[in-house]
Length: 368
Image (tube, rainbow, N blue to C red; front, side, top):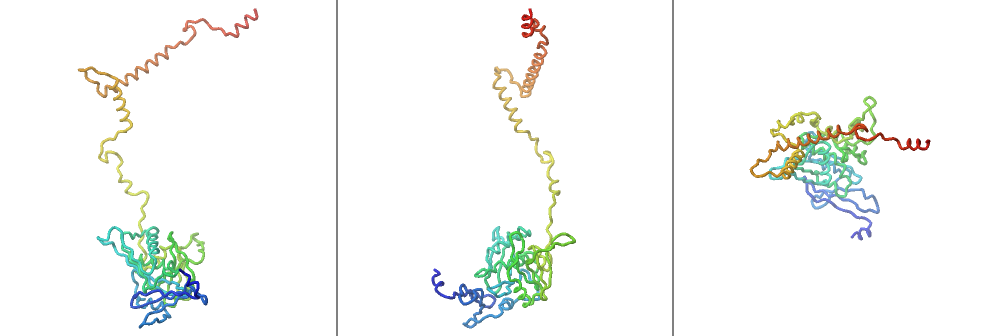
């Protein structure tokens, strides 16, 4: 099926076609190019029946955004389309499940791979203690750009996606002067991405004063405390660069307020002391051991089968049978004691003459 691609020198794909926010964008990607780089991506806008090149796609994507207001569920990410760095706005909406929606919330995703969104939800629930099972989740990339089609930047927007989800769930706005870049791992850690310098320049050009990214250099141990710091802050070309190791630290730094701390349940709690300490507290009768009941029942049954009682004579009661067994045991023990006392203690008691050693008799006969 790709025979034609092997015959030609250049293969181009024109992607897009969705009208979002009043713009008609097309992404021109090169799958094969023998005369140049295939990493270049062209951004065009359909206007009046023709395609017009867009020289500044970042400004186009953020044209309707209010930079002075902190918004809930809205985070800015810096992505690379080919060799071009651009800013995209990731929006998330988290709402409770309606009564007719069932026990599990819906997941609606646009512009990002649905698998990445599900991965973010799982990491937030496991590592950060935030449950989205009873919530409807909607995620969208503003401008109609598709980060998972022909692009390797689907994972670089993980941090912005996670922060927008947490912001919508907790109703805490995201700082409007901060941009986010980073890949989120399954352990809740942040992993670095390529070409960070280009992203920093793009963030500064777009007017952001702060950027949160994964740590790009090895972490140094604090000499005073002997521990690693959770994040570091530095200034690069007039922009504050915050490098974090964990997702939860990046979330607290990216929101206008920190998340409320979870209460940890200790080992010695009141729940353990509220458990009943005896059978009387449970309101039940005394429980007998099943093994003892079965043993007693078999003994009683065997005694009834072995003893034949004539008609007109009352059968012995259960207590009498137990007393009978105890009497038999006592009589048997007394007989054993008598036998031990009646055993002969000497040769005279046996009524026999003294036994002479055979070896001594032989020696005397030989001497005579």
